[in-house]
Length: 557
Image 1 (cartoon, rainbow, N blue to C red):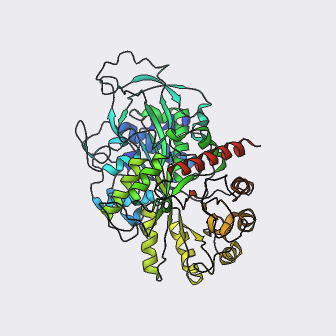
Image 2 (cartoon, rainbow, N blue to C red; image 1 turned 180 degrees about the vertical axis):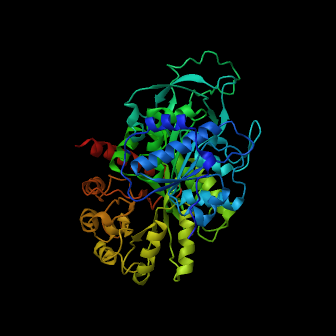
Image 3 (cartoon, one colour; image 1 turned 60 degrees about the horizontal axis):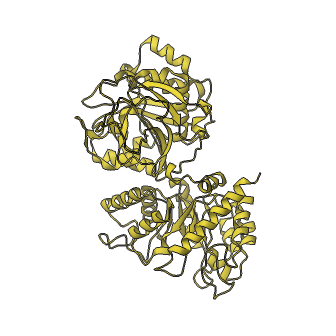
């Protein structure tokens, strides 16, 4: 058992500030904790001490909030040893509290933090965290590029001599659950206001707060000013997913008064509940937010490309094609597809750390996530199975699609719950899948298992075998964990893929049935098994169909 690190006595503000913070804290949490939660607050800075007052106020505010509401417990420390792997396992989320510089220099501890988040942990940062894990000077020198992608931005440009710059904060997404405290209204603020560099982009973060450029006087800016963005996009706070993890960042915390302001403190504490896993909030990046995608968010749907659709290409090329189609999700594939020309290997658990890093960075550069992964072969022994699940958590996989042998399900159920990765049982025809080709068979295999064991139906095989997809949904219900969607030009063995809604596959009725049962698959996977080198126009039509269907269904009471 790893001992809990104790908060250092030096990390406590004076009595007057503690009283101001206490008065600003909400009386209760927005959400009820689903289980006892633990938040790690890391306060260390290297070669910079300008945020000390804000750091002390932040750790005090979060500690008081946890005590008052019971939403979480806090551990406050400056000891990098807290990032040892067994130590991190104690926590549900990490708050990097205004950290600057190489606060954790050891590569293994950085890797532990990254894997903690990709496996489903939470990460919160404020203000100086955008230049954490840098070699401190001005400008800071990058020392861990993936952290910038994890957080959503790098940089700390601000107005010289404007440590208290007056702005008006606009709500970029006024109805978002994390912005409820503002009541839909802009909020005046004064602080040291950061502007960000790459990898910040609306294609990879859900912007919450921004500088309202219509209500803020920016007339003193001059051409060439490092704080002047050509796109006039001045995000101040956002959330995102990284793998399975939840990330919250806000630029505001140079001065401690942010932790004495009731609205801002409420906003930050809602952010803490989000990263801890108790306050659900949509994270689709802002650039993707069409009316159709907002409808899909309401329905709980995520539409993505199954890599098998592009298996004649490399996985990197499949990522590029997915991005070209405007979809933020892809399903991985363990066979029939090389990773890239530079990595001429299957995409599986046998790749090196550096190769997996390259894959994560490729997906980040394309603004694409991988919530599902098809594992063709499930290892026969527990040690090898664990290696597969470790790989899944490092890549942020939420559901494995596979065809396990019935005798493997006991071990898989155990590991699915240990690693928080679902097992979606796939179906081919009776020759390949004698135990899983009918929905009744999959349901029988799920009996007595946890809800992490379920179905990953391939509608193409159902339709070719005469299985009605609507009746299959009624049989499997909430055991449907993810979907590989098809429509065929005719029922039966000779059926060929056609754009959704144009064939005999009852596509619309299928989506209506999913909605009727409240089924929210990990991903609605677009798998098009035809026209391998010229499928893009057909895929676009499938996307048009699901967009129109989602808009109609979401509009119904």
